[in-house]
Image 1 (cartoon, one colour):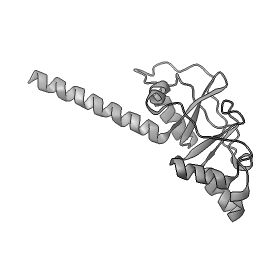
Image 2 (cartoon, rainbow, N blue to C red):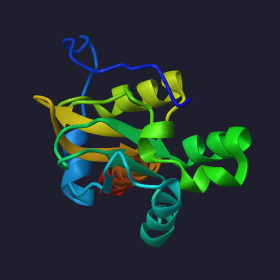
Image 3 (cartoon, helix red, strand yellow):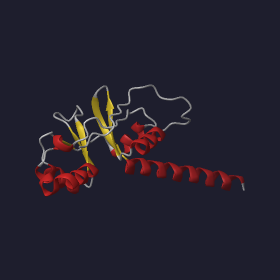
Image 4 (cartoon, rainbow, N blue to C red):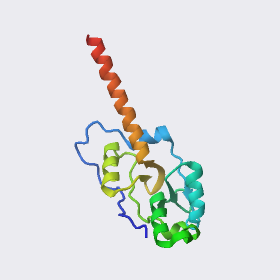
Length: 164
């Protein structure tokens, strides 16, 4: 249960990514805080945390620095389908994705969108030198992209008005 493709981003970035906006720019806006739980946290307590914080995933870690896994809403729903109501008594370690897809602070937002689409994930832990730096969700990426498009539209509008 929960073993998704473990793709840890450690390879050099591809050429030709154009004007790249990096993961660090998203983290500057949203912050580096990450909701973490210990491996023995019950799924019931994780559900309460997800609800209270209005988030879709938590990182599983013993020390809030080293990534052991990830538990998302999707993982909980899949466990409910298999284990029923007793899912709430299971532990994070029972259903967590043990090798989640991760990203680096220096990865481009374009690469994040591609990775999220390719691997069908909505949350990417940001890891550098083996240490958890943050987490980026599909919502963070969409918000960032919409802000970027709005800024570009304003620049084009101002440029057009200045010429006419």
